Image 1 (spheres, rainbow, N blue to C red):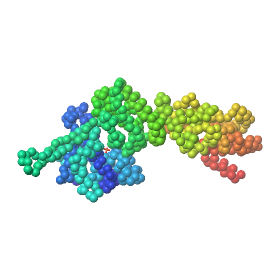
Image 2 (image 1 turned 180 degrees about the vertical axis):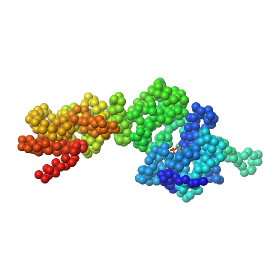
Image 3 (image 1 turned 30 degrees about the vertical axis):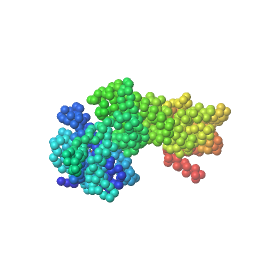
Image 4 (image 1 turned 90 degrees about the horizontal axis):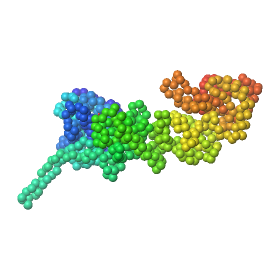
Amino acid sequence: MRTKQFKSESKKLMDMMINSIYTHKEIFLRELISNASDALDKLYFRSLTDNSVGIAPDDFEIRIEIDKDARTLKVIDNGCGMTEEELDKNLGTIAKSGSFDFKQENEKKENVDIIGQFGVGFYSAFMVSDKVTVESKAFGSDEAFRWASSGTEGYTIEPCDKETVGTTVTLYIKEKTEDENYDEYLDQYRISALVKKYSDYIRHPIRMEFTTKEPVETDDKDKEPEYRDITELRTLNSMIPLWKKAKSEIKPEDYNNFYKDKFYDYEDPARVIHSKTEGQATYSALLFIPKHPPFDYYTKEFEKGLQLYSKGVLIMDKCADLLPDYFSFVKGLVDSEDLSLNISRETLQHDGQLKLIAKTIEKKIKSELEKMLKDEREAYEEFFKAFGIQLKFGVYNDYGMHKDTLKDLLLFRSSNEKKYVTLKEYAERMKEGQDAIYYACGETDEKIEMLPQTDAVKDKGYEILYLTENVDEFALKMLGEYDGKKFMNICDDNLNLDSEDEKKALEQENTAAKDMFDLMKESIGDSINGVRFTNKLKNHPVCLTSEGGISLEMEKVLNSMPGAAENKVQAKLVLEINAEHPIAEKLKTLYNEDKDSLGKYAKLLYGEACLIGGKSVPDPAEHSALVCELMTK
Ligand code: ADP
């Protein structure tokens, strides 16, 4: 028999488990029971439609056996079991279903931290054991195999005898040390308390033979009392699912432990929503808003959904119809009295009851978020940093169908103290005479502040929303207005901050310089729609503004999308020149005296405007040559 090596990440994890100084070593039992329960669920699920399973619903169980002399603790289940390949794959590599990129985290975090931070699963057994064996017989197979490992050197897999389908995990408990009393994991009271503490809600019975002493009756009153051992099989867990218990009986850590265990998170949830609803739809819901996105949240692989139970029995692991996309970060479950056990995905979609439940769930999540925004601003901001982008997509998607549901949950940073504001807050503190909600787009707040247009708007005392995510401007466009106030990009050509007199004066100047601008446009080419003077710049000589609906930022986003190459979008750009800047006079002089140089200056200014606006210069080589020509003049 050959000893196989663990995959490298698993080896590191194993090392940590063995040498762990983690104080919550006891969680190993929860992990093993959880695995056993999952295995039972899988086979139970199958038994609903497959008679060959041959186990009655009530006979699925988890057994715990303690042998003090042999120093072993066994966790036994009659669940789905594992084949030889599965033993190899599942226990030779760190859990693929684990919610965590081990390598990356491992670089940063300390030993102790890691263990507390995520469900370590099966490997946690090595925190308390010198050796672990797993004997398993998969459902549908007549062979059984034994996986065994004493630590990092590797593991072996060999055939073994096992009558029944399922898995027996045997821990060879470490000897007691000065620091750690491992003997407690061989104590029936301690084990029973651990089951109660971490696994009470597990819906399969967790049974253990319990030995108690009973005095032996005797007629001889003078004799020392004698005792005899009574052994009985006890069920250690109440099996009442957490969500079915009265709220008053549930402690915050019960919710937190349940969440972390069930949804593979290393952090407590940000919010718990536990509700029982009666009426048109009767159901219990236990929902969690995580503190951070799971590692695959922003990938294709991520599947949204809530677990769906019918009268306490899991019927679907990820019921997508229960959650709108914009709340896809919510984890949790729904248990309904009204759904049938073997309902299929297809029939579910048309289930009126389910639609009703989904509606009320959406309302509950929304009102919880609103409450958080109102009462716990800081926590909400943290939430928004993690999931705000999802809400913004929600505004934009489905042709804006959900924008009214979501608009008051949005936050944007703004020029006022660079803190987050809601649209409502913005609207409420708008200055008198301000009739639009101003925003600016850029990669970062700093880059937005450097936009030439920013100063003029700030000078008026108007607040500017800083949009730094690709989706931001699209979401605002979809909203169109808030509270009757239009959204206005400060780079829009009709920003309109001037008084009537100022406007008139500028118009006259622009008309007078029309021929000059035409000439400039001609040398710059088709990338712009026109050139003109502006009043809206304070210190900067030039800027780019856009006419029509597509801004410079939207042009960038749209053109970076897959398939955009053949169908490039172009913002209609106008090169605006600060009428008060010395360059304006210079241009006029050149127009009269040196038209050739005017053309070159026009190109240079356009290049500058591109750079400032975060757009690439169309011809960098030419731009550079022109700069050098100017420098050597
Ligand atoms: P996780 O439970 O997070 O997936 P584990 O390391 O605890 O990670 O387990 C790895 C995998 O091994 C499980 O996903 C499961 O497929 C399998 N496994 C573990 N214990 C059992 C068991 N008692 N019965 C069947 N399969 C099991």
